[in-house]
Image 1: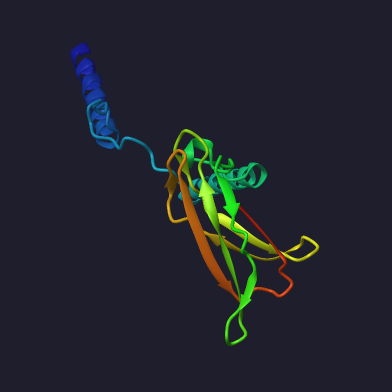
Image 2 (image 1 turned 180 degrees about the horizontal axis):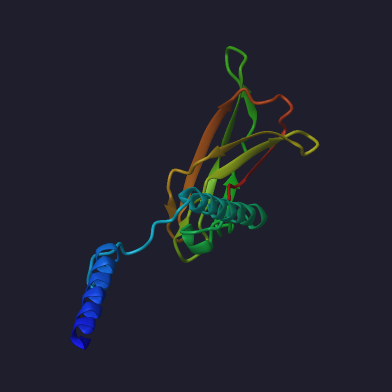
Amino acid sequence: MPVASESAAAVSEDLASAETSYFESSVQPSLFAHEPPFRPRRNPAKLWTMAAIAFALVVTAIGGGVWYYGVPNIGMDMGLAGVEPDLKIILNENLEKNEREDGTLFFIASGSIVNPTSRAQRVPEMLVTLKDAGGRPVYSWKMKARVRELAPGAKVDFSEARLDVPQAAAQITVGWVL
């Protein structure tokens, strides 16, 4: 009867393996099966909060740099913005306050811009300032020349009138707006 006991043992092993295979899969998952490329984050709000904090730090750093160093001269005449041109302003002798028939004061600022150099120069805006007898500014305005660029050795005239200038105005200065 040893054969019967061997066959009984084999049958019991088959039953045990059948039970485990029914409840537990002994099949290995395929290495080529589709899986998502990454596991999604559990809390995207944390990621957005970190991004917002990083953005705020960058904006604060840029603002502090502009406050401390000033606005950079990017693309403005290759860093020559703010440099006074070699042009000369010559004011006419007849600069004085006048009065219209209705009693309104007006002032005419006139003169010439001369380029004494041997190269063309860009003509910036001019700042006309009226000062009182003590030299304190009482009124000012910006004035544009008729041309944007002045050829070597060339000269261009300017003239502009302003109404309602203060009566305290006694002197005039004309400079460049830089």
